Length: 354
Image (cartoon, rainbow, N blue to C red; front, top):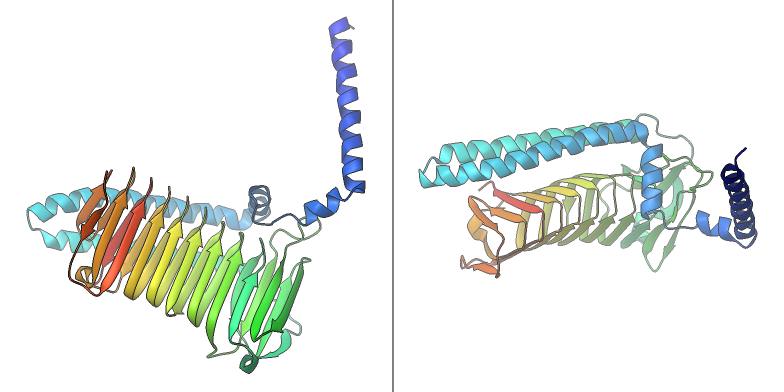
């Protein structure tokens, strides 16, 4: 054996020995515990979570591809709409809006199918009753790391919780607030871990905070004065949210929010996509980084005054287009509503049904 090869083998053996020693020392000194306690919303665990959700991820990628197609159609159709507006061919613009709405509805149906397959096909049995009555609760706070979350309707007037997995979760009432906390066990837990939250029918909250790192989030229907929802990645779906103030932040995931009714909405997307349908009566504050934000509002365009900021991205409001703006653009419609749109490198599309 050549001298160089021998040296390489010796160096490899030494490195393996050093690496093994470091791993043992790290585990003995508490590193294993720290790994288990790592934030489930971190990038490493998001990758591992998606690998474990392979059966869901394939469908999710199909949905993302559908969303990308819609985004491309939006961009192309906006250019066509500009030309059509000059020739006053408004019927084709309306056809475009209807087509986009129909396609996003199809995507919402696809997400619902995934959620139905993930959550409702094999709902775990057993007792779910927490013993916490609806009358005891005014607010709700949820922080469950990287697990998937599904809202269900309780069979009685008590809240219920059921966990399908081996993660550690706890629920309790304190100061009229219902808390659900915990995270998926990354070491021994199943990657497709699910948490079912049963809410009494007709329950109206003052404040609701939901913080989920990844996975699937199925909100169903929710009534509250204030709703604050933060998600790092994954798929988010809701059928109806009625509130006074709605705050939604999505990092790299996708969200299709249907049936939104709010006075004020603060919505932000990083590299992912959000498509929202509903009615906002007073104020909209929308920010988009490198992703896509689509809003189909049950309002008239003239219901709002607008502040538009756009760096390298694009913003469309009805048939008006804005891109690469050096200064903020203000549109005064003498309206009671205010709409602020800020886009860095992505795209924001706003359509109206009235």
